[in-house]
Length: 257
Ligand SMILES: [Zn+2]
Image (cartoon, rainbow, N blue to C red; front, top):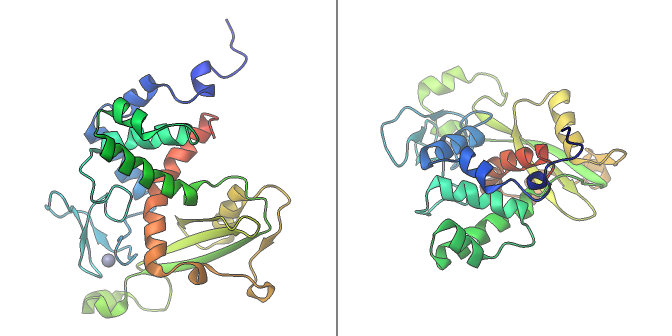
């Protein structure tokens, strides 16, 4: 029999079975978070540098920044920081909240995930806070678009590193594209691979409804990303978005949001 519409589970959210198949254990969920978070390469959550080193033997903090020399993990700077809950629980909770934005209570999460009520409340609160930034599609503007660089400072670099970095380009820095809806004030940003027109236009087109006016000129009262966020805030927003984004993209493919 040929199906004409999406199955019931797809209309009402990814089924629990599908979720469990996707995240059968903590290790699978951790790999998924690592790949999602460092999609455009490792970015230091402390200073924004792209000179991270993943080959250290430290268990809980397996990355080290070559610029600011601080250690970090997949959790550092994200909603999962300071939480003892496993990656599997976080992954499933993010999916459940993304598909039940208005509905799911921390009581239900507490029962479904087998965690304490306090943990469930904390987890739900932090995930919802991130969704405020990450709830992206459908900016109908007018919107402002901007790009900026975040990254390690030259004074923190070794002599060898400084010698490598000739010129004033964004070497060792992460490139961030951002948009702001003037009407709603909603902002979204993410790390992109380059600053060429195709990448930036693609980013803007993803957010803006067709026909939306896009401002990229400061002369029009345009407020750049550096006016909206401090570098530290931008790094935090990006860290959280980088784990929420892939989930939203995936759910979009399922036609759920
Ligand atoms: Zn750093």
